Length: 89
Image 1 (spheres, rainbow, N blue to C red):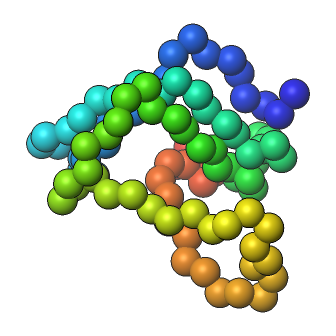
Image 2 (cartoon, rainbow, N blue to C red; image 1 turned 30 degrees about the horizontal axis):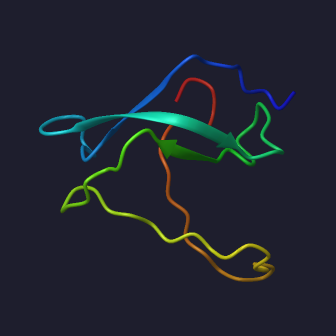
């Protein structure tokens, strides 16, 4: 319904921003995609729950999420991410 195909398992790599050197492979037990996610790049965000705790360190750190209901109208923010923003990139 929201453009996300069901999968049997989700894995990720943490602690490796350049795809070289030490890394940690983790498994996710749950993925919650934004309810308005579609085929474009708008609402292209999800929250992942890990099957076990991830050990924090110099290369692996947490981010802060805003409280529910916070209004961001006319607030300047900085967003970061990875992946393709258009076909072929």
